[in-house]
Structures are given as C-alpha cells and as structure tokens.
Length: 110
Length: 117
Image (tube, rainbow over all chains, first blue to last red):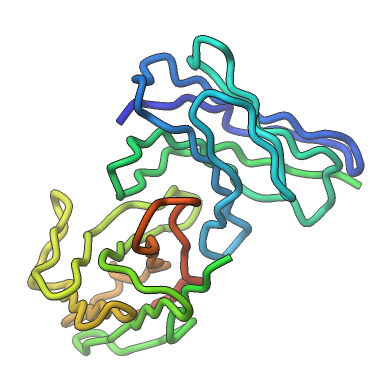
C-alpha cells in the first residue's frame, strides 16, 4: 500500500473549517484514500473514504486532487470535540488490514 | 455505524499472570478481525490478523506464543496476553470489517488499557 505523509500537528479555531492535508504521491489506480480519527484513549473512528471523486458525509468532506497524489479532509465547522489525531491511509480495496502512520494531531481552540 | 465492543476496557494484572481480552462485533459478522497495540504518544501498531476458524497471522516481531489469538465465531475474537510483564502494559485495540461489499472502513473497539504491575 502507498505511503502517506501528513503534518504532525495543526490548530484550528472553533467554528472554522479544519482542512487536513495528506500526500500520497505513490498511490496506485486501485487504491482508496481512507480517513480515520482517534480521540484520546478511544479506538479509531472511521470518517470517510474515496477513490477519485470528492466525497461528503455527515462528518466531513474529502477532496482528492485530479492526479490523486494528495487529498484534503475538511471538517466544515470544527468543534472542541473534533480534537483528535487524524490518520490518512491508502488501501487497496481488496486488502483488509489498516496500517497507521503517525497522523496529524488536530487541536481545536475555543 | 456498526459496533465493535471490547471487554474489559481496563485491566490491572500481576506480572506473570495471563489476561484475556474479548472483541465482539455486535451487529455484523466479521470473518477477519485485527489486533493492535498502542503505546503512549505513539501510533497504532498492527499485531495480528485474526481469521475465523483458522490460525491468526502475526506481524513480524510479534510473539505468537505470548499473544494468543482465537477467533471461534464470526462475531468474537479473543487476545490472551500470556505471562504478562510490565513491558506488555499498553492500549490494545481490535477492529473488524463487515462481510460483503465494503461500504465503509473497518470498525474499532473502544480499546483495553492493560497495566501489568
């Protein structure tokens, strides 16, 4: 599975949009981009995933560049409860095991 | 979303004893479950893949005789830490992927914090 690169930490003001970048320049055509987050002392939580089209659900939006070498997770109106470590993972659809990198520690400030 | 439950959420045991952690998928069947370990301020590290009705597949460096995994049904996998030592103290997390076409990612349990004294 392709490697991903994320900034180690980010800050965002409460109520503003949080935009979390992820680089995956070696992604192959059949690999999906998945996003998870882990709030302190809890198990990871699935957020969203996509292949090449932009995706939106009740939690977030996922914007994937046309060349698919990078993506951005957008939390449109961040709240204090969104403070967590966010993981971007590239995974072949047929594969099952998730391998976590270091992620981005997002802190939402009041 | 689907629910994965781990039990216990916290456990303290004496050095040399064994501890069993259960992972259950409450509202779906999972032929495959995964076990992770996480040390403070570090990312999750995959330990093993648990397959229903067959032997688990361990990641490199993980001792299979120390971390016994049993996946006896489509909704239950157990991890037993045998002869636990203080260095085994960690946050253990399981995950499961529902059978059938994947519409979402894996679902994770809430984790088990093991402290060996």
